[in-house]
Amino acid sequence: MRLRRTAVARSFRRLMTPGDASAYGGVMGKTILTILGVLLAVWLVVTVIGAIFSMLKFFFFIGLVAVVVVLAVTAVSKMSKSR
Image (tube, rainbow, N blue to C red):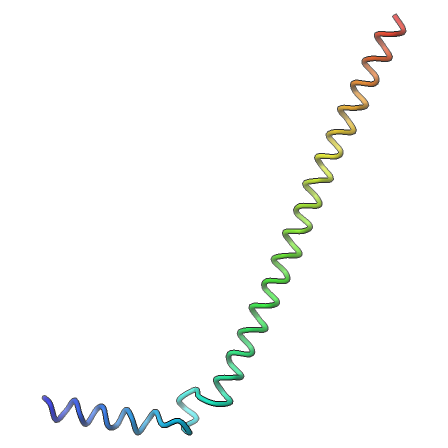
């Protein structure tokens, strides 16, 4: 069993040498991480823009409700003065 483990370890070391293209090292790893970083940045920008639009829409509806309340209070107060 000991012999088999060392043989597997040696063959694994031979497979994963630093210059090997299949080890995702060097240029390939940098390319993959760059693509993932760009995708993460785009996702973050889209999420932030969505949050800003959501906040602006919320403030717009709060302002609209405030205007309706002010108009209703003004109309009621003018009606009570005219009587």
